[in-house]
Image (cartoon, rainbow, N blue to C red; front, side, top):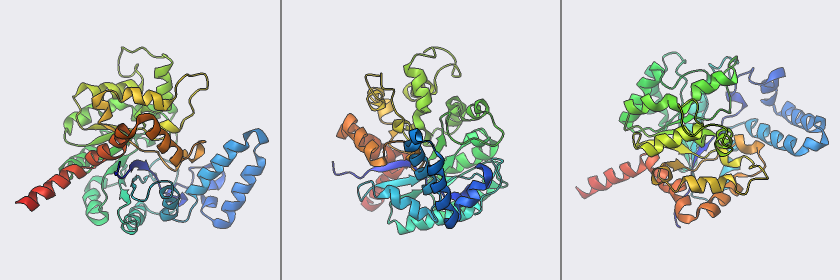
Length: 365
């Protein structure tokens, strides 16, 4: 098919955008310095036992990506793994209020750098804006940021320590609905969590059931619950560790998201497959995650509201590459379904189809 691919979930933030205490022993500060960065990665590789050398190499690769001097350099590594016309939704992170100290670079500088990368990429970069509702005056500043940096959507990360129905976020959702800016939320038990939060506390902030009232309040807002619940929840579902029937907090996150999508009550709810497809499937299983996804996509509501995304460069810790996952997904799903996830659905999610139709009507009149 002669259609361009959309990767709807990647990151390009660097060590400059990570709080000083995010890693122990001053490693974040050290990784910002080129002469120490190489030494740390070399020592890391030498100290890891031989049996774990592969895992060490992958962790080193992940750290090296985040240690680059610019978002443009990070982006180069992912862009070269895709066809020339591929477009990428780039998701920044606002980590200043997670309780781990302050980043070296202020948040607006990250947005400005991302806007510059968008302009230099000839449209390959689709920048979003990360929002933490605990940032002072964020709801009032948000429209100014939108006019200044011209980002295309919003990213929220509740496991940092806030609920998705925070009053400041409700104001921002209203603005996004009016201006057709889609929202994406981290929605898996894994990932980063706020300092001092237990895993169960972070899970409570991120749970997909938290979004039901939000989606009802903003029915025209395109909203993506990223990671499709995550591999951990896929495993709980596949191994039958939780009952099919029960409350939202008994069911798997995958089940909750599927039920919401299939119900028809949330017509603008999306999910993506970022990171989840990079996770190794147990060797004893007679099928893999790509096969399981193919089964899930037989439902029309699910198929038309699932997005292709990878979670680069977080996935650099895994064995398979961006290119390998994209090709495997295309091979398992076939051309029609693959481009449903990687082209048609992203255009709807980004409101690009509606904007295109509006322009056509204006020209015709």
